[in-house]
Length: 535
Ligand code: ADP
Image 1 (cartoon, protein in one colour):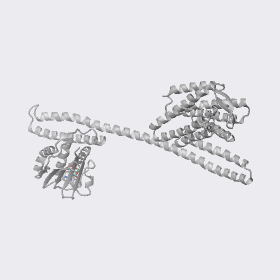
Image 2 (cartoon, helix red, strand yellow):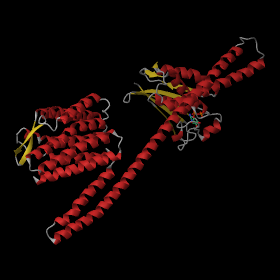
Image 3 (cartoon, rainbow, N blue to C red):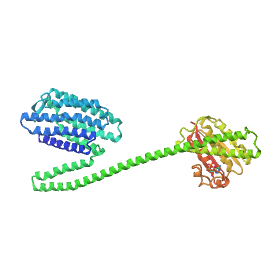
Image 4 (cartoon, protein in one colour):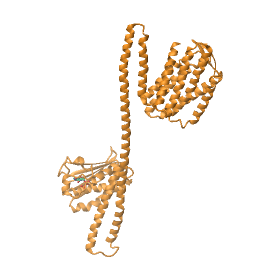
């Protein structure tokens, strides 16, 4: 019997202290308020239980048994409200909550009448165990089973979709609920005169408080980790300071006093360490918030910059198109005959304007590929690569001929599979590679190879020239960055820009392919490869 008194006393004290601390920490938060009220219910129940066990007279025992059940009646509704608050459902589930409060109110109104607690009678070693009245049966089904069961159901339902750390928190609450309410339920059979189980409600409720405390400790349910540590150290301290007085021999007194002193040192360090850790945690949280804000700001700025780049290039291109159109018409003499000198100069102007448009288009393409990573830029169509290469050769033949260079192509015996390519852009890529070969070759020529790699289901295109070659140390940088140009190439083609290869690589990669160069070194020619998957 004494053990029950002790447990109920401990529960009453813990529930009161814990509830008050939580409430003081944040009086406005729903979670803190409902937890406080739930703890109040537990405290009334526990202190009532303690008092009820200690009284001898039947009538007084009946009063205290009703008082303890008054407390017990409060627990389910506040528990449900707290759980719904924890799951962010308090607003959404207003109706069940209102029904629960109404129901609890009715039970409370009758809690000191025989409708709720009929009488007390001796059972097991308890001289005055309360006996359930008809309304109490309603409380058991609607309040205890109904409200707690509903809260429990919501905990399980939301556990599945909750983020990982929230799930662990819910697990603690679920465990606490099973222990607390499961333990509490062992008191009920005795209320109907059935003594199957010992009433282990009070000891188990102590564990319920402990599990909720664990939820707090690990996941800052109420952010009172520090207060809780102080509380536990305080309770232990009180127990330990009393112990020496209770010890029968001087030796034991000294020993327990030493334990108390040691505990004081340990407690001091523990509280201190928790303070520091909490400080560090808060600092880390603050930093994380700042970091997030900074990241969002950077993302916004990047988006604004990209948008600016994309739109400004369109902005330049539009007037150019009309200039080119008018120039063409003037050059075609649609507006009257032109003097030869003017025609010649206008022809040069027209070429420069076309070059300008090409450069703007190239840089627009580069920005688009860089910013959108190639997504949604390509306009794919079914292409026969052999035909595409033939067209490219037709375009470049005059240039090769002008420099007295051969331009040969070797197609595979079997026709290549048709491919889905951005025809215009791949045409530009092939032109670029072959044109580079012509530009960087003084004698000899350029050979093109086209083959199907069966094992990789891809095609390999290569351009082999007998030109200036590329030194080993420059190879890794070729086509990797815009404006990247070889030393030797700068001498040979001072007007080059180092854009074409970079853009070609972006286009090939947007097709899921690869572009790379090989060379034995200066004066030994180069080979440029493109591998494109056949999808
Ligand atoms: P550009 O030809 O305008 O310089 P590219 O982007 O087409 O720009 O080429 C970048 C650089 O790659 C060239 O400056 C040159 O150093 C090197 N390169 C490209 N093709 C060849 C080639 N066939 N032989 C030797 N070097 C080459």
